[in-house]
View: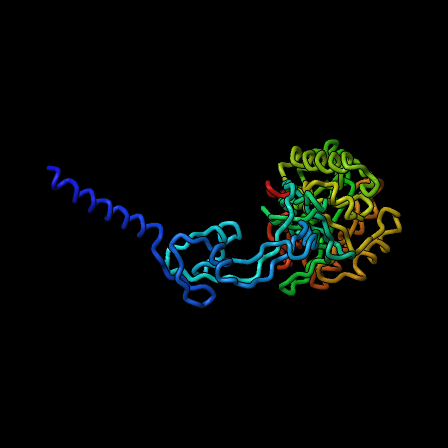
Length: 390
Ligand SMILES: [Zn+2]
């Protein structure tokens, strides 16, 4: 036994030593910046850079905001292995196995340590024009969610990763321009419903035309049958606030209450959902839009004011309504707020005169639908804010 055991051990030692040498000490070839080099297997890139005396320029040590804190104090070199760029720590510590293509170039900048915080930035609200009869939400606002870094050395703050890119809320302001060349006009009646509403509806029915009623929530509650009759007649009902305050000078709770209560009074009385309204006194500013929290989507003004509330006489009302009409015009009249007998007399004359000129009477929703640039959900006048918008 002994005579055979000893040579076997010797062979085992030689083979074992060979395996160890093969695994740990064998020379291999790598390409370094285009030159073939022979190095011991497992040599780190850092050792190769040092042994080969590769000259590189170090990057700078920089703040989170990108300002140089110390020149040349960044990473000493950059490493690319087989076309894959490595971060400095793993690239420099990489142990070659043979056959790699190493590219050693100038060092990258090294950023200071920083504290990181995730913040949500609310969208801005912008209006794309100053003048126009229609204001509507053409783009909902979404928040941006991003990382904000505060440099431990510099104290600077700067944006880091963007986790969600938001967008601003945009209110488009414009006059309606019917796209198909039709001559369209919208009659609108404010401040009702009232004891006159049924008479207006009878005239409209007799003439075969539709109109839009901007009603006060409080009046809808007082005249629910008249409100329902507006919808039953195929006319459109929208909000004119609950009790006619000047929303430009109202606080947010008032704005929200005025819109919410009027929308729900209309829905309760008529079943019609709407998010469209006419601001009392006409103007709806950027500031007030901001206060609405997205519960209203369209604000409707007018471009023809009959000034009927002054009771200037039937002829004056007819003349004001008809003299400067063009396609897309929105005519302002009232069916609440006082004696409306002049309006009742003027209304049939206005309709006859404009029909003679080839005009077709439409609701606000139909008018908006006739303009291809206005989105369909907005033109339906009952759009609601998407869940994730703010
Ligand atoms: Zn009014």
